[in-house]
Length: 399
Ligand SMILES: *[C@@H]1O[C@H](CO)[C@@H](O)[C@H](O)[C@H]1NC(C)=O
Ligand SMILES: *[C@@H]1O[C@H](CO)[C@@H](O)[C@H](O)[C@H]1NC(C)=O
Ligand SMILES: *[C@@H]1O[C@H](CO)[C@@H](O)[C@H](O)[C@H]1NC(C)=O
Ligand SMILES: *[C@@H]1O[C@H](CO)[C@@H](O)[C@H](O)[C@H]1NC(C)=O
Ligand SMILES: [Zn+2]
Figure 1 (cartoon, rainbow, N blue to C red):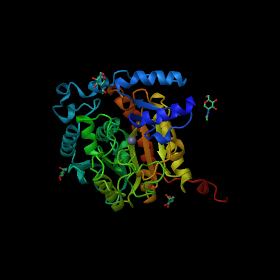
Figure 2: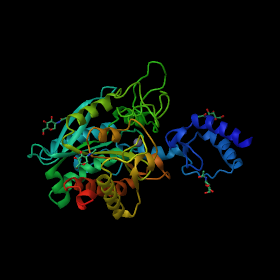
Figure 3: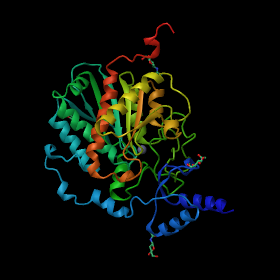
Figure 4: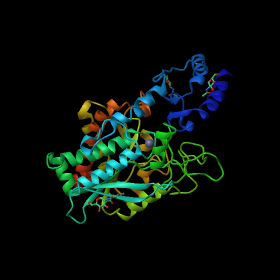
C-alpha cells in the first residue's frame, strides 16, 4: 500500500542524503524527529512526498551554502595579530587553533603546558594543553576533548573558550583559582584533526576521521564508535560508507589509540572524562551501549544534575540529562563507556546547542552564550571532584 511504498522510498532517499539527526537511519522510528540536509534539486520531490504522506516538516535553512560562507568567509578580517586579540567568537581553522595553542603555551608557562599525545592518520600532531598550577606532583585531573566529530564546530570553540577563561580568571575568580590549584585539566581542542581540517577545506558536514579503507572508496571511521568497549555492536555500523562506521577493529584510528593510551597511563589521576559534542542540548553519562544503571549512579547523576542546573542559571537553557542509551540512543564503542570501564568514575558527553534549528551551523553570534553556559556546567562537574561524593549509603549508614 501507499505507506509501505513511502517507507521503501524513504529508506532509499535517506540513504543518499546527509542525515543530521539521528546520525543513522536505523534510529528513525515512528514519531521521530529527523533533521536532514538535502540537495537543492531534491527538495521539490521531498516536499510533495511529505505532503502526500501528511508528515509535518519545516525548512530551517533554505540556503545552506550561504550559511556556510558566513562562517568561513571574510578570513582576512579575522586574522589575529596576537593572542590578546584572538577572537573567541568566531570559528577557527585547524592552523589558527594550533598557532593559538603554541602562543598560549609560550605566554603562560606558569599555568599551561602543551604536548602531543601522538599523530593523526594523516600525520598531524595531536596536541593537548595541560592547565593547572604546577607544584603538587600527583594532582587529580580532568580530561576534556572537543572536535571528535569534525562538523561539530562549536566543540573546538568551547575548548578554546575554556582555556581562555581558565587563564584569565585564575586569581580573580575563586572557584577557578581553586580548580587550577588543586586539579590539572587536559584540554584537547581538536581530537579529529584530519576530519576537522577536511570540514574546512572540502565538506562542511564531514563527521568521521579520514583513514582509508582498502576495500571501499569511502573514507573515515566514527571516532566515537571505535573504542574498545562492546565494540561494533548495537548503534554502530560495520559498513565503511556509514557515518557511524566502527572501523576495522577497536582503536584502529590513531587518534583514538593515542588518547586511549594517554588516559590508560594516567587513569589513576584522571577523575573525570568530558567529551564535547553537538547538537541536542543534553548531558550524557554511561552506559551508551545498554539500558542499565551504572554502579555509582547516584554520584554521577547528582553531578549531572548540578551541571545542568548551573548551565540553566546563565540563560535559562534547559538540558536533558541521563544515561546516553535512554536519553539519546544506544551506541557501542563510545568514549564515555570506555572511560568509565577503565576506572574514570565521572564520564560525560555534552551535546551542546541547539536542538536542530541551526544544527551544525550554529551561528558565531551564539558561540559566546553557548560557551558561557557550558563553562558553568564544566566548572560544576570539576568542583564536585574536590568534594567527597555522599552516596545514599554514606548519608544513611543504617540502610
Ligand atoms: C505518535 O504521535 C501521535 C500524536 O502525537 C500519538 O497519538 C501516537 O500515539 C504516537 N505514536 C507512537 C508510536 O508513539
Ligand atoms: C541540479 O540540477 C541541475 C539542472 O538540472 C544540474 O545542472 C545540476 O548538476 C544538479 N545539481 C546536483 C547537485 O545534482
Ligand atoms: C610549551 O612550553 C614549554 C616551556 O614552557 C616547552 O618546554 C614545550 O616544548 C612547549 N610545547 C610545545 C608543544 O611547543
Ligand atoms: C564508585 O565510587 C567508589 C567511591 O568513590 C569508588 O571507589 C569506585 O571505584 C567507584 N566505582 C565505579 C565503578 O566508578
Ligand atoms: Zn558528536
